[in-house]
Structures are given as structure tokens and as C-alpha cells.
Length: 423
Image 1 (cartoon, one colour):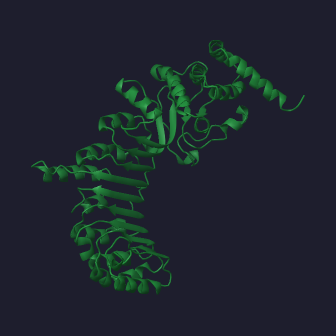
Image 2 (cartoon, helix red, strand yellow; image 1 turned 180 degrees about the vertical axis):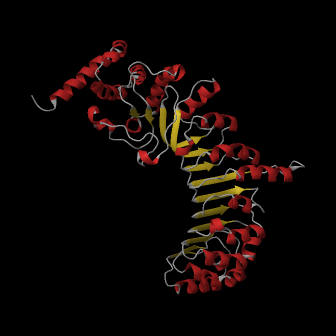
Image 3 (cartoon, helix red, strand yellow; image 1 turned 90 degrees about the horizontal axis):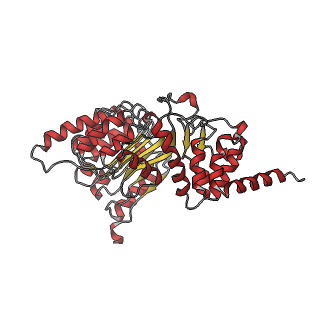
């Protein structure tokens, strides 16, 4: 008999068992653990949803990674839907089924060799981390029994929710239990804050490393979200985009100051290295309130589509939390930023000369005279990358800029606009 015969016989046995799902489901309680993986794979290939649902409830291993199987099957959402339906009973009862050892449902790309490993030799990886060792991660707090779902990128959006988010939202609306969630990146789009808050109660917030807020919120909603953000103590990258003010209300000015204080007071993020503020309409004259509350110096700062005042630029150039910048990207229209470059740019670049690598003024409406005045400040970028695209300059001034930067000994890369004469 060839070495491949046992595997073939096992395949035949699984196929025979799955021809009639009722006896297959009934036999799961007594099925040896080492037969679960090949039977599960066969059930996935044959789209036997009833068997998949039942197998989840008596899964004899602590971990169930699905991403590899979902990528191999189309439509892959059918697999996830069957597994999530299988979680319904355990989540309602909050008591582990007699045989089940399932603790972690993996929807992230790690641990993809699980299905090629013999069950007896497989060890469960860190529950919290997608890459880091377990010792570096905080302990997981659970009740009597809890299933944890590992995600890589969890996007909360109402318009086009995926199968998993649809499952969560249905349970939120029905007031039912949710699984514990652990993810590296959280993204907030168009979902109501009330629903977000209910879901975030089940997210292990200290596992989150990246946050993107792009839900066209107003400042009131952002302030309501801020207490959750403060619990994401390991966030290293934060992007806040399209935040509106409440300027149409007569008492808006005082209310904006109050709400901004509530938001900035929660930015107690010791691991934050990258901050991106895009189309944040409350930032005018208030940049100091945001930067002052940070607990560690930024490495990357991006401010785009925002209106900045002289006080904002002055604080940007002297703030302790910008003293270790490696990247600064500004794409802000308006007269003040280019007009005041000679005042603040040289000061900022001089303070950060030991760390600075990338400077970008993209579409900032910098004119010929303003650029010429600030050429000397670029000497501090001698071993850096400089992006000046999107600004209206003449051919003569552009030639002067190119000539100046070429003589900088370690200047690495320059990105420049086409001169005005080309249009």
C-alpha cells in the first residue's frame, strides 16, 4: 500500500460522513480530535454549513484560524457566516460547551500553517498579539467564558459592512452578547457613535496600534469618542479626518473650546509616534491644545486641508513634542503658512536637524518670493527628502531651487512642480 493511501481513505470516510449531515453532526461529540481538521476542511470544501456550525460548538482546539480557508473559497463569506452562527449558542449561554476548547477565532493573516500541522504538535500562539511575543502583551480579562476574535483591520462602517460586522451589529440591536475582539487597527467611518460605543466595550483596546477616524463627525461626536481613545494605550499611529465644528450655533465658540479640551485631554498616548490631521476644521488657532497634551514627542506629523494661524505655526516650530520629528508633511492652503515661513521654518528645521528626514509642502500656495526668501532654511535638510510639488513657481525660481539643493551634500530626493510657464 502506498504512503498516500491512509490520507485517501480518510478523505473517503469524511466524504461518506458528510453525505448526510444529520448523522455527521450527531457523531461530533465522540469524534477523535485528530479527525476534526480533515473533516472541517472537507466540510468547507463541500460547503456543509450545518456541519461547520456544529463543529464550531464542539471544537477541540483552543484556536480556529479561518483566513486561509476563506481566501481559498469563493464566496468566502459563507464559511464565516456558518462559523458565526455556530458561536451564537455559546455567546448566549456564556458557558463553554462540554467538549469545546475554543477560545480564539482567528480572522487575521497570522498562523496560516495551522491547517498543515498535525493537531498534536500545534501550540496556541499569543492571543493578543498578531506578531509580538506573549510576554510583551497585557493580560486578557475574561468572564466565566469568552470567545475572542483576532482581527487585523477592523473597519466600523454602516454603508458596506462585511459579514462579521453585520453579525456584530445584529447582536447589538438585539441586545445579545458579543465576542471579545482584539485587532491591530481600528477604522471608524459612518457608523453612529452609540453603536460604536457598544462594540468598543468588547474590544481589547490596549491591543490596538493604529486608529483612523474618518466618519465626517462633528466635534461633539469626537469628544464622545475620546474616552475610548485614551484606553488605547499602545496606539502608535492616529489619523483624524473630516471633523466638523458647530459654528452655526450662536454659542459655538465657547462650546468648541470646551469640546476640544475634552478631546485633547484624552490624548494620553505614550506610544503615539505618527499623527495625521486632515480636514479638521476646529484646528484653526488651536494646534497648541492638541500638541501640548501628547505624552511623547512625535516622529511623523501630517497636517492636510486645515487652516492654520500664526500662533499655530509658531507653536509648531517650538513645541517639545515636535523636537524629534523625522517627517513633516503640510498641505494647507491660505496666505499665512507661506507668508510666515521665514519666521518658523528655519527655527523648526534647526531644532530637528539631528532627526529630520522628510519635509513636504504640497500645494501650499507658496509663491516665488516666499520660496526665494526661505532657501537658506533648506540647508538644514542637507540629507533629507524635500517635496515641493503643487506650488506655483516660475522656471527661474525653480532653477534656483534645484541649483541650491544640488549642492547640499547628502540631499537624497527632491519632488518639484512643473514651472508656471508650462501651463
